[in-house]
Length: 196
Image 1 (spheres, rainbow, N blue to C red):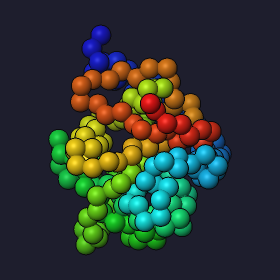
Image 2: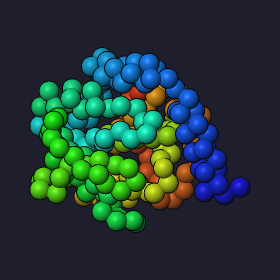
Image 3: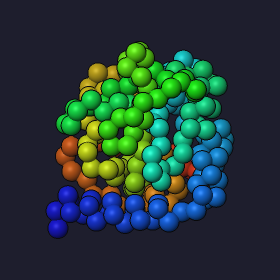
Image 4: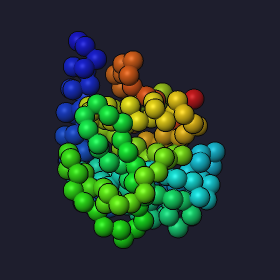
C-alpha cells in the first residue's frame, strides 16, 4: 500500500473519530488546552516570549477550538496572525489578527483576516492536525499547505511548529513521505511535549 493510500485511510478513521466527540468533550478539551499551556508551556519556544508572532487558525468543522488559547497568547503579549490560502500548491500567507477583528470567508471553509491587515511572518505556528505520532510526523487534510509553509519558513529562520489536537490524536505511527515536515512540539488537552 502506498503512503498516499495509508494517509487516506488514516484520515478517514481520524475524521470519523473526531466527529463522534460530544460538544461537552470539545469544550472540555478547548479549556484543557489552555490549562496545559499555562502549566506545561513549551518555554523554549518563541511562542513563550512576549512579542513573538504566533500564527493560529480559525477552527472549522470538528477541529479542536483553539480560540481560548489564542486569547491567552494575546494576553501574554504575542502578536497573532491567521493563515490565508493563496492558491493550490502555494505556501500559506499570514495576516495580523486580534481577538474581535472581523474575518472573511476563505477557501476550504476557512475564515481569515481581511486583506487590509498586515502580512506577518510567524516565529511559531499553531498547526491543526488529524493525527500525530511520537516522532512528530503529522497527518493533515492532504493539501500540503502547512508542509510547504513550514519548509519555506525553516529555510529562512528558526521557527517552532506546535501541533495542537485532542490527546487521542497522538497515535503510534503516521505515514509520511519526503515532502512532509515534522512538528517541534505537541500541545493537547492533556500534555505538552517536545519532539526530539
